[in-house]
Image 1 (cartoon, rainbow, N blue to C red):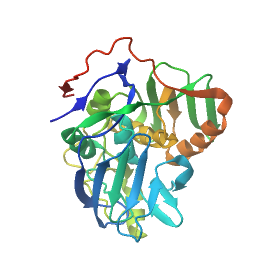
Image 2: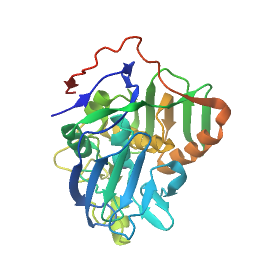
Image 3: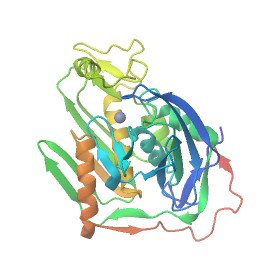
Length: 313
Ligand SMILES: [Zn+2]
């Protein structure tokens, strides 16, 4: 495993923009389309951001992974531009944000990102094997100056000033296996990889049956989702974490908040939120310009070494 080239960091957060060392290619099926999709992640230059490129269409239409390109959040996060869409981007986006990767061109030959095993674990492992490298431009961050809170119908998202990027997720389901669960993490690469990336998406059996009846979740199976019934789960292998449900919600949050287009220094707290509510919050956040500023991180006085070593995480 190549791991990550670590050079300048401030409290564990990379100071410089990062991209991949090499292309990463893989195939899989789309959760909702059931179609086989081939996807290649390519290193991209500084200030490029994350963009999705539809290689199956004339002129390679390109869609930036930004909140103002989100066109649907009902079943998955869908971005679109000029009538072209890419669906179910949230777990791949969480992987980029969780590993502090700023610039990637995501090329695919269909309209949906493969679901893999329902988590960001396979993306994370493949990216770690390809390696992550730092680039020659500093990263810019949204830094909270004061709290921003958004509440509606029992759902809540708040963003609070902090020196690092933290997320706290709270969920509350009327099911004996879930009930109230809470999880807080500092979003840095090695914690994301170990604690969050492999938490799978989940659904209730009656919802899955309903979606299948209407031709949705065509690619959904016990290989890519935890399916919950009245007394437990259908997956024979059991859960990956005792609180896998809230960890997956946190994974979704990391992906959703990455659509601001720049990392955040602050503490995000959510209660009973989902993709649609998170996106409503992002609009609110962006328009609330008095409550944040953008800045870079302090550089170390003396570079630790000009010939940094590759460290596996
Ligand atoms: Zn998810």
